[in-house]
Length: 404
Ligand SMILES: Cc1cc2nc3c(=O)[nH]c(=O)nc-3n(C[C@H](O)[C@H](O)[C@H](O)COP(=O)(O)OP(=O)(O)OC[C@H]3O[C@@H](n4cnc5c(N)ncnc54)[C@H](O)[C@@H]3O)c2cc1C
Image 1 (cartoon, rainbow, N blue to C red):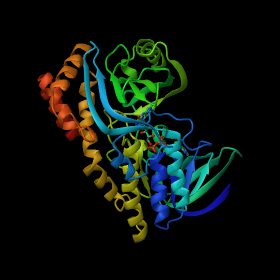
Image 2 (tube, rainbow, N blue to C red):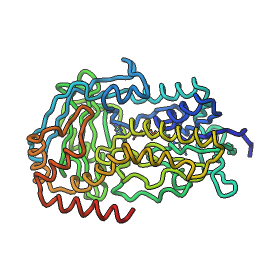
Image 3 (cartoon, rainbow, N blue to C red):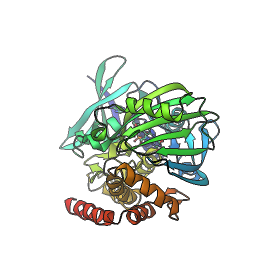
Image 4 (spheres, protein in one colour):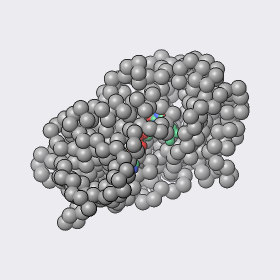
C-alpha cells in the first residue's frame, strides 16, 4: 500500500459532473485529485448526446464546431397509433460529440490545476473518526492499490456509482429505476429536419421511449430505453432491432451503446460527513427523459460551491455541506420531483392512452417552451386527456410527500 499525498478534494469519476466539480474547486486554489477508472475520458460513449439550449450549456462549456454534431430545431413525438406531435423551436438544443465534450471538460479541470488519473478506480472510501477521509484507489494498469487522503470526496461515478452507497446515501437501485438502453449510430438514415424524435408504446419501448437524435447529414443516434419490468423478458437490444427494422430498415448500423440510465427519484440526502454525491450518482438526471449531462454540470457547480465554503471554514460535516442539498432541491431538484411523478403515471399508460395524450399534447399550448418540456404544462396535458390521472397524481404526490 502506498500513500499518495493528501488532497483537499478527491473526485471519483471524470464524466461531466466530476470534471466540472474538479475544475471549479481547482480554480479556487484547492488541491484536487480526479480519478477515472477508464483509460480514456469519455470513451466509450454511452449516451444519445442531446443537450438543451446554448445558454444552458455555455454556462459550463463554450460549444464550438468540434463539440456539436447537429443543432436541434424541434421535436417529434410519435404515438403508438402513429399520431404525431411536432413542434419546431429553433435553438432548442444540440446533439454533441460526447467524447469530445467530456474530454474538453476534463481538460478544463487539469488546466485549472486538478490532477487527473485515468485507469485509476475508486474501490472504497477511507474513514477517520467516523467521517469520509479519502478514497481507496486501484491503479488498474499496475494492479496496485493505494490510499488517496482528502478532506472531502465528491462522488461523481455515474450510473454504476458505488460511492453514494459507501457513504450511506443510497441503497441498490430497483430495476424500474434504471432505463435499460441500447443505441446504434446509424448511417444512411433519412433523419429529415434536425428534430429529435421520440416513439412511444409497448412495441418498441415498454415503459420508456425510442429515439432518433440527428448526428449530422444522414446520421443519427437511434436507440431505445425500456423499463426492464415491462419488457416481457426481452432485452433492450431486441427492442432496438425491432425499432431499427421499422424506422430505418436500410440504415447501416455503427457504434452500439448498451447501458443503463437512472430515472429514479432524487436522493433525499446528497451529503454525508466529508462526502457529496453529484450528477447521475446523485440521481440528478431528469426522471422523465433520463437526460443528465447538463444536470450533472449544474449539480457539480452547486456541490463545488458548498465544498469550497466548507473547506474555508474547515468544517466538513454533512450539515456543513447541506447548503448544496438545499440549492439543488430549490432548483432542478424541484422540477425533477414533478417529472418523477409524471413519469410514473405516463410510462404506465396503455398504448391507446398514450395515443390520447399525444393528441392532447398537440392541442395544448406551451408544453414545449424555450427550455424544452415544461413539467407543469405537460402534467396539465396529461390530466386534461385523462381526468382520472389528477386523482392518481395527487395520490402519488401526497403519498410521496408523506414518505419523505
Ligand atoms: C443510452 C444513454 C443515452 C443517454 N442520452 C442522454 C442524452 O441524450 N442527453 C443527456 O443529457 N443525457 C443522456 N444520458 C444520460 C447521461 O449520459 C448521464 O446522465 C451523464 O453522463 C451523467 O454525467 P455524470 O458525470 O454524472 O456521470 P458519467 O458521465 O457516467 O461519468 C461517471 C464517470 O465515473 C467513472 N467511474 C465510475 N465508477 C468509478 C470508480 N469506482 N472509480 C473511478 N471512476 C469511476 C465512469 O467511468 C465515468 O467516466 C444517456 C444515458 C444513456 C445510458
